[in-house]
Every structure is written in structure tokens, then in C-alpha cells.
Image 1 (tube, rainbow, N blue to C red):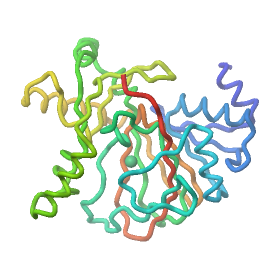
Image 2 (cartoon, rainbow, N blue to C red; image 1 turned 180 degrees about the vertical axis):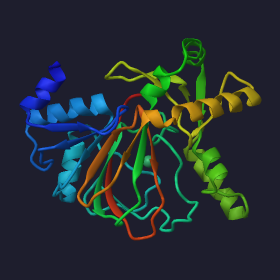
Image 3 (spheres, rainbow, N blue to C red; image 1 turned 45 degrees about the vertical axis):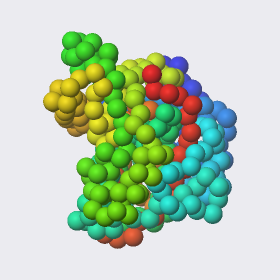
Length: 290
Ligand SMILES: [Fe+2]
């Protein structure tokens, strides 16, 4: 038995991998009353599996925030308007509310358009539709590891540009149809300039290499011309989102799901029209992707 498996067994956790790629469900633990040994085993699972799901958790907003604080400082969420009652906790209701909505987010890593992207986020299901609204995750570790050796070498010397505004225009979340919308864009640009990160980064804790792109915010490759950049990003995005790098979380009431945002993309599936409510905390990281 590996040292990791042994520490998890000692802590009494029942860990069931979701797929061969990433993600696990963890049973036999109450997140509102965690011992230090249980937390240490959960943290190790967080590094090993990148995506964790817990079922049937009875959590207050304070419990959710306290669980998040074990991983680090909680951070403000610039694009989620609804703060819940407890500091650091946000309420997310719906995601468009219609099966035909186009106002959903594509595959992304939270805040990769910032100098310090989030370490991860934790969601708690309060009210969820009978079916639909699953969340998909994809491993950017595996995306790097599955590239051929010459391609790994080539991309390792490149720099990616991340831009919240360009994606906003491309996806229809932002528009330039009216003077007010243009003014709004100018304000977004002032606060959120384009950011550069290496195209291949090293996870600060696991030491594994990450193909550091996401379908939403990564908009170009600095060293290449526009045609080359578009072609390379198109190829890398198609490669990085291959089914063999993924897992899919089906929500249940009182599920808690968290992910390591440094090495995983996620995609919320907007295929439901009923009400949906999740509580969310995001964890700050001082890591500058490198
Ligand atoms: Fe997100």
C-alpha cells in the first residue's frame, strides 16, 4: 500500500475514483467536523485526484467557509454578484435558467486572466434540478503528458495570453452595440488588462507539468503570428479536452464539490431549466503560474 493510501485508510476515508483520469468521491467524513488527520488525507486526495466530491453533507454557510479556510484565504469573486450572508460565501442561482440559453461559460479555469488565479473553488448544492446541471472537469496534467515529445518541447518555450474581454466579446457575454456597452468594456479593460502566463507551468505542490490553457480565456500565443497562434490554440484545445482526460460530476442535494483550479478546467452544463442554487467559496493562491 502506498504512503498516501495508508494515511487515507488511517483517517477512515473511503475514496472512490470517478474515472481513470481524475476526480474521486470521498465517503465516511463530515466536513463540518473534520479532524486534522482527516483534513490531511483530504488535502492529499485534492493533490492526487484534482477533483473531490462529498455526498450528504449538512453544512451551514459558516461550515462551508471554515472548510474553505483550511485550504487558504477566501477570495472575492468579481463576476458573481450575489454574496450570501456569511463573509466569503457567494450564492449562485441558475446558470441561464433555460436549456437553450447561450449565456453559459465554456471550459475555463477560474481567473486565469489574473496574475494570481484561484487555488480552487468549493461548491455546495442547496437546491438542484432533478436532472441536468452536471459539471465536467478535464485534467491539464494529462493534456500535457499525452502530447508527443517534440510537441511538449515546442510548447514549453511559449507564452499564452489570457483575456477576459476577448472571450466576453467572442461568447456574447459582452457587446459593442451601444455607447454604454463600449463604456462598460473600457471599464472592464481598465481593471482587467491582458495577462501572460507560460503555456506550460509546473504545479507548485505536486511538481507535475500542466498545459496551462483553457478554452475561454486563453486567446493567443505571444511568440507566434495570428495564423500560427490560432492554429496551435485550436489544436491544443481540441487535444486538451479529449474525453480520456475528463470526469463528470452529477450533483445531488447536499453534495460538496471542489477542484484544484491550477491544473483542471471545468465546464458547467446548462441543460436544465428548473431552479438551481449552489453556495460557493473560492480560495486565494499567491501562485503566479510559472
Ligand atoms: Fe468557473
